[in-house]
Amino acid sequence: MQEKVLSIIDILKEKYPDALCALHYRTDYELMIAVRLSAQCTDARVNLVTPALFAAYPTLEAMASANIADVENYVRTCGFYKHKARDIVLACQMLLSEYNGKVPGTMEELLKLPGVGRKTANLLLGDLYAEPGSVVCDTHCIRICGRLGLSQGKDPEKVERQLRAILPPEESSDFCHRIVLFGREICTARSPKCSECPLAIHCEEINKI
Image (cartoon, rainbow, N blue to C red; front, side, top):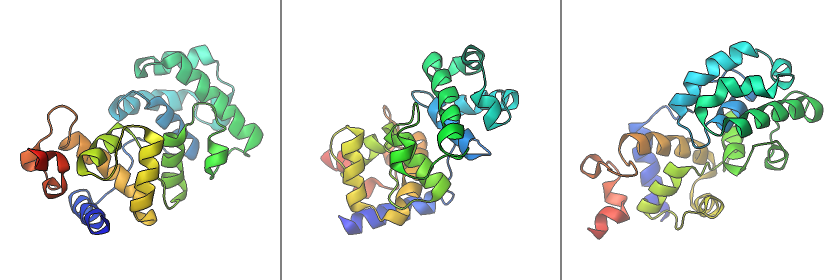
């Protein structure tokens, strides 16, 4: 398994050398907001919405004091906009009142923020703090790692634990970003481009055929 994991990592590195988060942001709290908006929404849609939102509320203080109904109007097209707008404003308030205006750097502290679950927390830890072992289990990660035989099941926490056990900690965050790029381009949910797949040699789904 370890040889397989390292081979997959090397192939993904070659295909996607820049393992960058697809969400656009300038500050730590802007990334927190963008990730919250991305729940059940595409990164592309979030990137269309956030410029106007961040321009209207250019500081953490401004976002924390925003009228939730007004924020709803900016994020309406991201889906579940009422919950997201509320979580954004309340989380920004909590950053100011509890964390000195900074997105905290531990899983325990992050999970106290409104709207922040393990997926969001792992992304923030990996991208803001380069925390080793940060595994972002989104739908791409769960689907593709299952097809590759790196994990079993679809429960995000269980898949996260399985991947933590086999991924080199220093590679895990970038691995997850590359998996997202790979899932959008090649290993799509409904019509994967198996004939073009550089990971075909490791794919258990292909080998079943």
